[in-house]
Length: 275
Image (cartoon, rainbow, N blue to C red):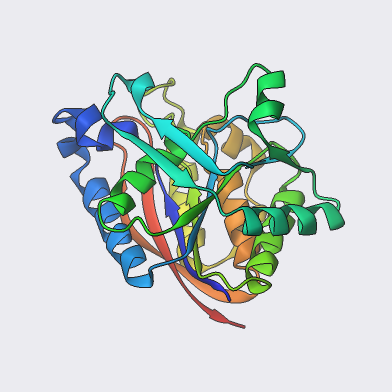
């Protein structure tokens, strides 16, 4: 089988009404675009959703793939006790991705509950996954999850890992979609989570423009200081996504972009065809 849909999605908890309590209306375009993506995924009806997030338990030197039968997450850290989900993990696909990554010497590990316990960490579904899945679950729940937390390793390794995900899918009888979860710059306003920096606006404009044009090489040649100064959390998710798109001609379709709260929220789906 193949990956049937590719998406770059933000993960602001405030977009969820139970968290936002009215503030979600200030990012109405983001809310509506996430609903559009959810409808698209329902039409595809995937067996598995592959999701890469910045906010699971992260290891400095290895990509983490959650490995267990099920995984639970909630938004209690955001003052909400009535938004939670329990998802089945696609262990067959998880194991295949791990096996292929190991064979290609990409640093990866199976994050089991017992392993994470040894690091005083928890086996959980993070908000980087919960926020996009919240919208999907309102319309479609008949799927399993592959839950991946990226690591701050070499860009080329992240890209190769994306290629591994694509190869693993092609070896399985599984219809899937790929979600790269990531917010853009966190430094767009002084009222945001970090101080304003002019690199923030420049980064958001450049990465979205290059994704829209399908210019992978230029994305990997973006100025590293600008990326660092922008204070983003989506770039590594994007690099993995681009690896999965490596054999396609692709164009990103920007459904919405907002920065109301000083963080760039870009919702994008990708049109693609084999080269």
